[in-house]
Length: 134
Image 1 (tube, rainbow, N blue to C red):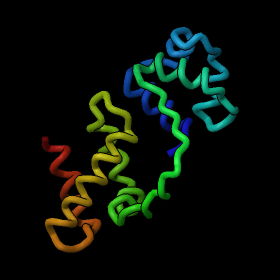
Image 2: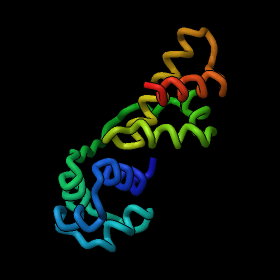
Image 3: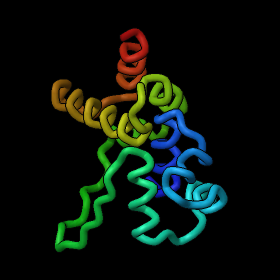
């Protein structure tokens, strides 16, 4: 997920405007709007102020970590579903959409273990129905 998407999702999940975040972070509205739209090169200090204004913590790491594993079939299934994004937005309940998507992928991965096969689009739709009913 891109930085701009993370910032926008977190801001919207908190019910905040760009202007209110800008005031709390001591940054300009156009600067934050540009970051949310994938433009600009923020400094670590600016990202730290944004994270604090959004009630988050900035974490920066440089290590010899192994590359991330390839996306699971569940992640690809979720990305291919237009309905999933609508449901993710509906069930986020104050969490970012990115975090909600990650939890949904983890749930689908767990379902694959139980089923003994990769989940299908029908499995995803059943899970989305269940989440909307909850």
